[in-house]
Amino acid sequence: MKFLPEAIYALLDSRGGILQQPGGREFWSQPQEALDALGHDWLVSEFACDGDWGSWEMHPDGEEFVYLLQGDIEFQLETVEGVVAQRITGRGAVVVPRGVWHTAKVFQPSRMFFITMGAGTQHRPV
Image (cartoon, rainbow, N blue to C red; front, side):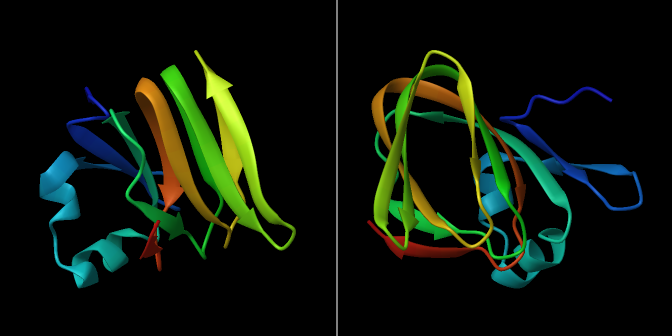
């Protein structure tokens, strides 16, 4: 199977299978019920980001692995102590803990690779 993680997402299920899903807007425009049903598997995706994220997000059912392929970003994690910023330039990764609200500031166009268990994902405005 050939995947282009920006155009075709991969769902890694708990039984060891991999399911292809149309990516991008086609994936995210599905009804919430459909997204929730898919959210119990690990979603592998890639995004190009030209600007700051417009919302905070939180994944209650699993940690999120984010790998910066190129660019310059600052991940912001909302902790009980306040917002913790982690800047990544060039290449690098961050693990977002389960249940932690997070967003990103983008300092130059960036490409990010994500592995996320999306069930129950919540969003709120920045």
